[in-house]
Length: 348
Image (tube, rainbow, N blue to C red; front, side, top):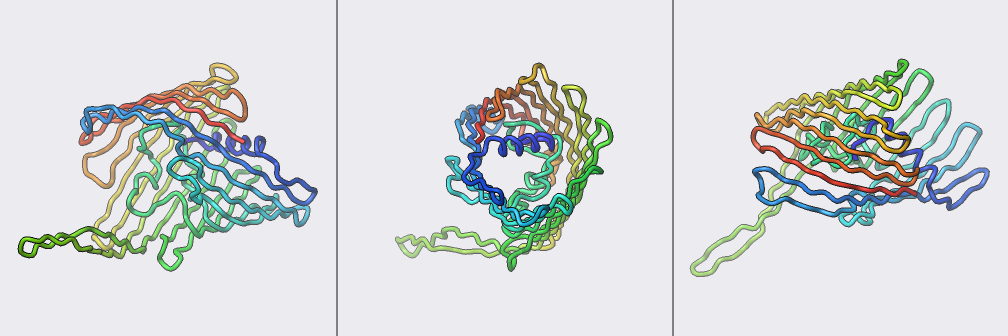
């Protein structure tokens, strides 16, 4: 799901409201939460296929347990574990972390967590899409810019002047990349302004196995061949977002810059991407949304993407959302891809 910072806050609130209470005392609370995502999508891949591709998927459905234990009037201990329940990720560990929360000093957590660029996101607000995204982890696919990191320390501070988020993830002996990110934001009247920077150093090893055939006389034998590559890559990214919230509508823009140095291949890749998105409330529960995106493909020359999308969003209650969306993406090399889809999400 692609969502604005505001939508993230709404989603978090919905999870809290609808979570099933397991334990509730004066000093502790344990809640079981989750969301089911069902989505029907048809994609016409342009010149890559003559046939449209129609799928019915439960996507990244998930569930988890969130615990809060009170130590003092201002300090709580947090513990969260989250796992996938979709058809392709059932039982997969998504997140698990421990931490401390203070109204005065902020919140710090340690464990397997999402990177800040995925938390902050920007104004990109399509709910279905084709998978093209202005986010660094989407553009740097294949360079270990995963949205989840196994050993992350994350700190968040919120106040009347704005908010601050800082994160660092350890490489676990080069089993994972090292990442560091810093984002901050504030509000001026109806205008939200936020942005930040990020850095990643990837020194992990990649081992590929392939079959090699050897012919001797009239016989052919298949043997296994392994190739191990030691990565040496540095990725930096910067983001700036401006979002205007009107009476029942919003309009904003997000700019991302990415730069990747592949020291092993002695190459340097750069990308600049822009997203423009907004929404308008037709009724209390029904709204229309849409956007435009320009993504410079930094892995292939002259393969930039231009995309437009629009949709209807209906929130019947705090525990469910329904949406219908269509869009088109165009690239000089790949051609024009189009899609339409409908989806429903149920929260508890």
